[in-house]
Length: 55
Image: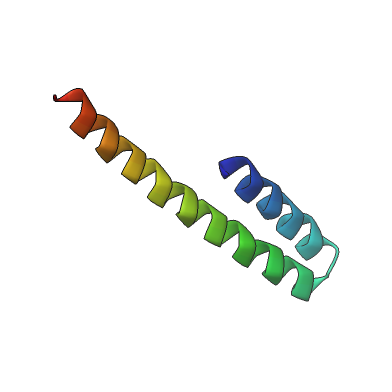
């Protein structure tokens, strides 16, 4: 998931360099959503791992 966030970020940067503002904004927003989704899943996984490890 983090890989896809980085891919969309690179697409956004390339689109911004070439002047495609709408595409860059869309790709940047997708990258931001995927990044925060990755963070949420990572925190949940960490918490569940700590709970299972303490038993």
